Structure formats: C-alpha cells, structure tokens
Image (tube, rainbow, N blue to C red; front, side, top):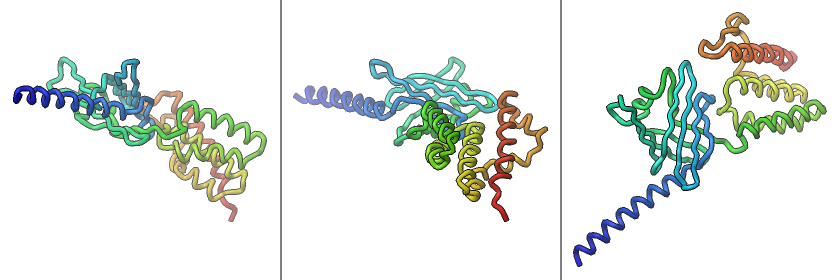
Amino acid sequence: MTLSRHYLQFFLTIVIGCASMLTQARQLVPGEYVSEGAYSKLNITTDKTGKLSFSIHSQAEGSCDMKGEIVGGKATLRKTSMKQNCVLRFTQKKNEIAVDGSIDICEQHYCSLANITDQYFQPPTCSTAERSQARKEFKTLYDKKDYAAALAKLEPVLNNCGKILDRLELGWLRNDVALAQYKLQMPERCMATLQPLVEDTTVSDTILANYCDSCTDEFNAKYHSMIKATRTNLRLCKPAK
C-alpha cells in the first residue's frame, strides 16, 4: 500500500511538472517582436504539434543569429566548442516578451559585435503591413487636403509604434506628421514632433553622407535625404515671432 502511494505521488509529480511546462509554453504568443529602435528581432513560431521555436536576429556593427526550440519557456543551445550552455528564458508580459538567462554566454558564441536585447515588443496595430496601410491612407487624405483626417490616421502610428521603428522610418514618420500639423497651423506641435531630429540637422552634409559607419551606403543616402527634408520642415514649422 505504501509502495503504491509512492508510485502515485511520483506519477502526480511528473504530471504536474509537465502541465506546468505546457502552461508556461502556451503563455508565449507566436509572432514577430521587435526591440526598441528595431535593432533586434525575435520571432516565435509554433508547429501543428504545438512545439514552440524561436529565432533572434540582431544587427549592429556586427550581427547576432540564433534559433532553437522553446520548452517550458526556456531554450538551451550549445555548440561543440562551448563549455557552458547558452540558456534563454522567455516570459510573456502582455504585448512584450522579456528575455533573460545566460545572455553573456550566448553573445560570446552566437554574436559578433552585436547584442541580444532583454525586451521585445509587439504593440497592437504596429505590424509592417498595418504601418504601410496607414501611410497609404495618410497620403491619400493629405493629397485631398483633408489634413485633420490625415493627421488622425498617422499620428497614432508615431505615438504607438515609434519605439520599435528604425531611425530612418521613424524620421520620415515624424516629418509626415509634422507636415500635417503645419498645414493645420500647429507650429508648436510641429516643432515638438521634429525635435528629436534637430541635432542631426546641424551635422554637415559631408558627415551625414557617412553618418553610420556600420550601415550601407544606401541607408546613409536615405538618412541624409530624410534629414535634408527635416531642415526644410523645421523652417516651415518655426513659429512666427
């Protein structure tokens, strides 16, 4: 009888442990998550059996790539040359996923001059497709001179999605919102929208042409164009004395 109870207790322990792991895994919502500034992307996927997988790609002066299976909210990776495992733990917090674990060890073996962030975001209505659609609708309304509706369409994208955009997309977004504010005779709001870009507008064109050492020539050229547009819009938005 005592032996049977021991077997039952052991069985229940296994079942509870497995249930806990499954519950933790289910809490992770599949999808693409982006770090602040869009330097790093985390993709969570699930297959027909419910198995969760992840991939991380970070881009700075170098790059960082890793992928693997998530079991019980945790992924364990190891190359043959590693003395310690790379362990990453994933925790869902509403529309965010926090990543912790042996991040230093992971970066040593899977990254080159790049970092794994500890926080990834998925703001509602901020997917690439949703942002693109908002920009198209903004342009249509702006071209019709319906500036109030155009601003109402694009300003929420800036407010809700700004932190997950790279600096080029964010810069153009600020300029479009500022132009609508200018057309609506809102000079103070227009200047406030462009304020985060003011410092870069004071940089010479020669420096701007190679503004980001680790970026492509195409990116630098596009960023240069965006800053030149910002200079013009700042002059437009400057309140009359």
